Image (tube, rainbow, N blue to C red; front, side, top):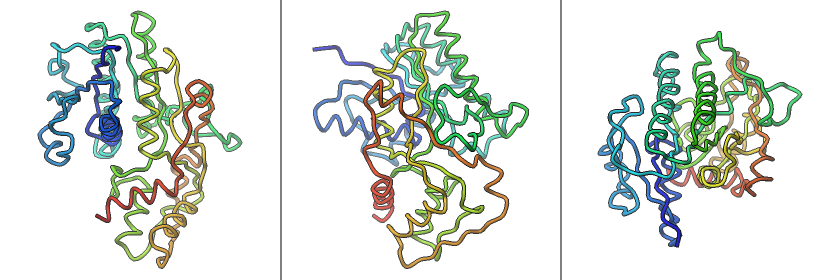
Length: 324
């Protein structure tokens, strides 16, 4: 029997982290979990009080620490993998652009230094499709080979520019040291752990369908997105961490495009057919990417990954959690 892998997981209490922990919990229930996991968290006690299902798991331990404070890292542990998923995408708007940039770039460098010092052979960074910058109107799906980029002179692009810098930093370390590094460029997602009251359109639509008089669409509804279920997200991230080619970036997301208006109509049909959809109009949509859909042919060809949960099932499953 192969020895169990040991993962240091950052961002383990966020949307990506909860997706991964639920994935591990399900695998443990099936008897095929082959990992031990240490979650680096600023407040393990608060997380476990809210999510007690993760307490007392023999394969899971929480370590109090912060990616911006290397002295708090679990220096006495041995790891086979680092899965670096820490970035405040939900709370990001509460940070200044400089704070967001610092958190992403400095945090990544601290984890890379830790991986080198501890001789950890595999490192995966969860990056963002935002590194490509605006998607050209004639490009239906963004491939990993597209070298567009966000405008570095716009402070509001701090998140996307920082992710691009973090990717480059990873490759500089891979070039100098023996660490195998894989990049997961993540797009848009839906699932039980997605907040319903922040800047995610699909979460806002589910909230409106469940508890408000109508479903409101900011902007003109013509922006195009795609959504991967949280359970597929976890499956893909684990496959990339274990089998992705070192020095390679992979898009993570659905390639099944939908306009925001179509998405609102689908949520209404599934969850609240008696309610109406109201398109607010205005300039909101023009200030964002008008299209944001990945080409996922690389993960399909190299790792056999596919979208296994249709958007309709993903929406219904997410809403069912909030109904209880």
